[in-house]
Length: 124
Image (cartoon, rainbow, N blue to C red; front, side, top):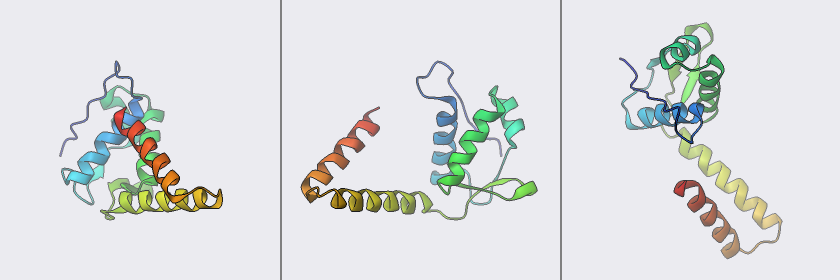
């Protein structure tokens, strides 16, 4: 299976983020099935015309998000945890809520700030 990834050097979005987003979407949609082996960092970098560090940064972020897993010398694969991203987002939301409460913020104000942050991120 060939990955259909395109990185636009003219985009205002960093190349590693373009790569991360596309792999994440392909994994979430099932176009990249669980257990699918991803190209090596060097090989993928050459294929895409990117620096190896750019691909490595995208892979590190995807691994932290639970989208992929590295199995040492065996390679990098799409992870089995299908809802890892939702678990991570839920944990981050809970951490935010607890922090806002510790600061003495009202529930309504904490929700307002969270909604503003989501709007700002998703509008961009």
